[in-house]
Image 1 (cartoon, rainbow, N blue to C red):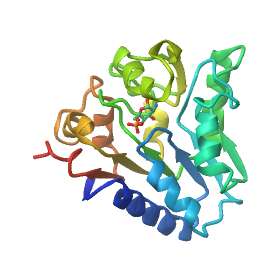
Image 2 (cartoon, rainbow, N blue to C red):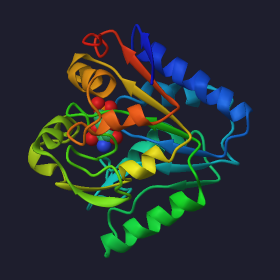
Image 3 (cartoon, protein in one colour):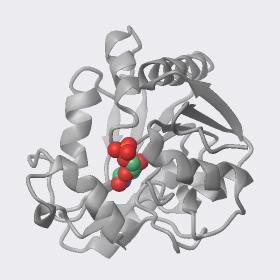
Image 4 (cartoon, rainbow, N blue to C red):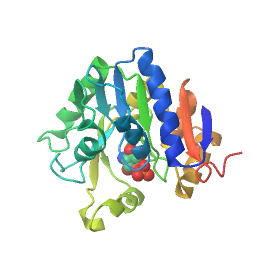
Length: 234
Ligand code: GLP
């Protein structure tokens, strides 16, 4: 795992953008995308660039159960606002959180990931070390599945909603096995509230108690963290 420490999220977004640009010059076809505040500066860099995604495919990590793309808290809405309106892809996939049969929708999503192997996956990390919505305790061999969100995740994400009661209690998420199948992974972390998760992920044991620690087993992971998020590293 390579760790790059940056001054702030702005600089982090620029570095992640440069990594993406280099990979696109090499001909990558499929991007794995994330939501949350961590990738916002990365998306800003992309929006301001002349990069063209019209021949590329994107696959998002996760979506809340029960929210559709018209809901401004859905991840589909987030992606439209932050990226897809400015930079349309040939095809963009997100888990269907409104599917009647969620289990079948999760299986469909796995098929999509197998048919479109992810070349470059962008990740954030939760305060409890979750990646995607894979909460502590998720088996490492899990593929796309329905998740009961941890109380700490509901609390952390309530800042985007009018009240904590409005935060969905479930999500559909790519599994850890799906994330690990990506060729390159770039994880962004900014702010002191991520310091414990980053410490455990980089220096701690590989354990299901801290899902991000599985990335130690991957051979091409770049962590971009600001000084606050990296402050507890050895
Ligand atoms: C959310 C998302 C994750 C994200 C994480 C951190 O719950 N499901 O994909 O990485 O929490 O969010 P943020 O970047 O806003 O700190």
